[in-house]
Length: 438
Picture 1 (cartoon, helix red, strand yellow):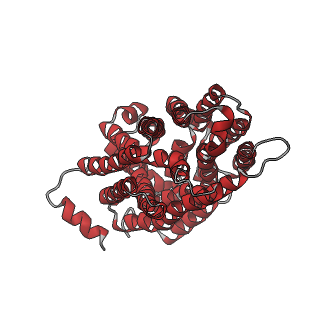
Picture 2 (cartoon, one colour):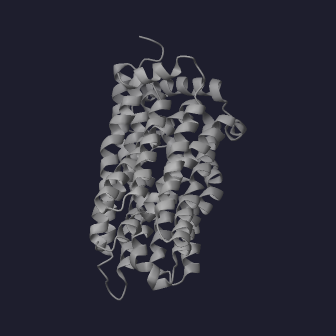
Picture 3 (cartoon, rainbow, N blue to C red):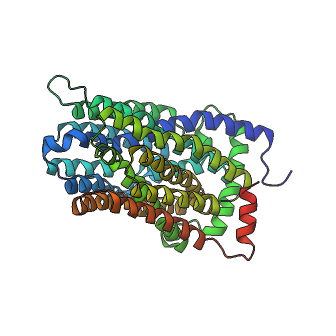
């Protein structure tokens, strides 16, 4: 057995940890993503009620990420101080309360203010979870672990799209359907935040469902991983913030997130613009690309773990996503648009879990917390750029062709940058492709 091999007992502990931790975190991410993108459905009726133009809606959709950008790194530093589990639980409860407040906005100014506040409260969640998972699972498992966590995002759209569109038609007690939607979809954040407070251990050392031997075995395995990461990428907070590689990864994530949110916030309105679909039909059609992505992203992540190859597993989905969004910009048929969107969304979500294995594998300790938070901040600043660009181009051109072309170009550039950041080796392309096709 090699030094880095996982013995049968430790493998069993890791399986138990995966069953106890990942489903809860995936539920939180499901709720988080639903609470940040459900304005795409609310917009079908809310915009007229509170006087939002297309440009103002795009600004409001994107301003979430200004708050997110400003508070992401400080939030992850707090995680180091108070403990990952308690911090994740607290911010989950906070964003649930803010999301519920969206039901009571009556003007564009209030809409913008609450979207900014929602970004602030969610800022520490995702980088905190990526850091938390690195405290529990070794590098060789992280593709599938992050994939199992990240599948919550497309699933939140598979289930959330029809739910949100259905709630739009359910006014109650003097409240419009979009207000009921915000209240109903915010409540689980508060509930599961409370559950997380009591159910999630910070690390193997504090997990009461592990015995002393199991804690020691898992801690030893993770310490070897952290030692290798510290050797390669440094372990200090400054090392994480100053690393050129971290900034390069931030650029890749920025380009992917332009497409992720540019599509996520505007897809309902793009399909609704055909003039032939009811709100509930829009919800069902939006769910199709996300369902396909949920089915394919996990096998792709497992394949990356099995082969040990990351760069091409990141670049190829990016190119597929670019082709999908470009095709969507060229077709006028609802059916063909949904098919093209499906390829675009598959590309986005197959790339994301692979991307997040890279910083988690080469950063350790405070460098991991600061570096992951910086990457997430840089990437999610594109959550402002993507939706705002879509809104600005929609209002300037009267259609969605230019905006979809921007999403295609962004995904293509992400694939190119991923390949450019790969350490140059004469046989890198054929050897990588050989491993992918194994």
